[in-house]
Image (tube, rainbow, N blue to C red; front, side, top):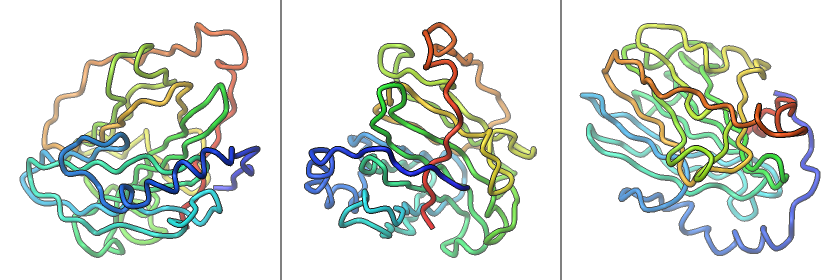
Length: 229
């Protein structure tokens, strides 16, 4: 993914995130923190790694990772949102060894008035590094913003899905598959990534609030989250 440089990062925002280093490196198992939430509804454990990019905006956490963390069936974990401009990937695998293939939820918190969050799913390293594949083809990966649309968040799409037994059309299948990137004008407190054995497809409709708003909200170009590696 070739990415445009950050236009501006507020010094105050960087300073504010300096104090949350411990929180970022110590994810919440209680679900109290704001950020991406991984929920394991499968009948086997999964492994989660939170990887921060090499951007200067990442501050002291630049290039760091947390995990792999073993997430047993019925458990969940929350990683606090990374600093503005710090590209982050939450990688989920069936093995402690991510080189055996993994699914990724990638995001970039922004400070633009029309976009506070860029997100995408990725299967680019699904079977091995650089080898596309569906790691969790035996599962339904249901990802969604948590809260009430329009009030708690404003997203172009409020959910992204990888359906059981199918190639995930909502996820990157190659490194420049940038039309899979979605954005939120108002960032949700939490974005939930659920792994389950269910074949049921959620009936929650996509509510495109951007189409009801004046330019530039409904005509934003796709911007891929900054790469972590």
